[in-house]
Image (cartoon, rainbow, N blue to C red; front, side, top):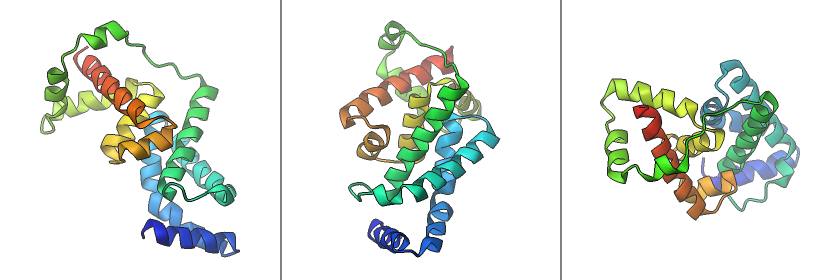
Length: 181
C-alpha cells in the first residue's frame, strides 16, 4: 500500500472505521520491533513497547498531518517510546572519546564494515551495535537495516539531514573501535 492509500485509510479510521487500523500493526510491527529491540535489548520489553507504539499511534492518529510518510511518523513514536523506556530504566552506555574516533582512517572503517561474508565479524558487529547509545543504535538500524533515507532518519530522530550524516559517520567509527577493541 502506498502513502496515498495509507492517507485514505487514516481518513476512514478517523471517520469511525477503527477496525482498519489493524492494517498498520500488520504492516509495520516487524520493522518497529526491529528498531525498538536495538534500543531496548529485552525481548519482552521490546514487544510491550512495540504494542505501546501502536496504541499511541492510534490515540494520536488525529495529529498525523501527512507532511511525512505514515511509517516515518510511526518510527518517530517508536523511537520516543524506546528512549523514554531507557531513561526510566537508567541504562548506561559506554562512552568513546572524540580523540580516538578522529584518528581512525575512514578507509579502515569502510573496509571492516563491508566484509559481509565474515560470520565472526558479523557476530562482533552485532555485539558492537548493542554497546552503542540509543541514538547511535537508532541511526544504524534505521539507515542500514531499515534502509530509510537520510531525510527520513532526520525526521524520525528530529535532526537535520546534515546532523544525521555526521552522526552516522561517527557511529560507524564507534562500531570500528568496538569491533577492534
